[in-house]
Amino acid sequence: MAKHRIYSMSVAGVYPFYVAKAEKKGRTQAEVDEIIRWLTGYSQEALNDRLVEKTNFEDFFAQAPRLNPSRSLITGVVCGVRVEEIEDPLMREVRYLDKLVDELAKGRPMEKILRK
Image (cartoon, rainbow, N blue to C red; front, side, top):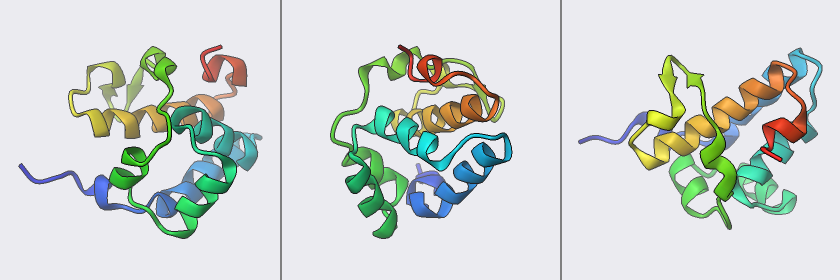
């Protein structure tokens, strides 16, 4: 089976859309970065490096220092699909990130987004 095209897309290519979505609703790039760091375990410096290197989604998640164990608490619908029902592990990680950015843009408090 062919890989989904999102896997080969650069995180840096999608990142500005995450930031724009958040900023349009009064949130900040720093909050988007915090969400990504929480989900993946990257430091801010390492995240910046992945963006500069134009790392694709497949490598971005494969190289993540520590995927947050609480990410399994992320539930809901993204693109018409329930994230907790996605079978492909990599697609689930991508959709977790999408869902967190959606929650940020909807004004949800950071402590709830980060499942504290």
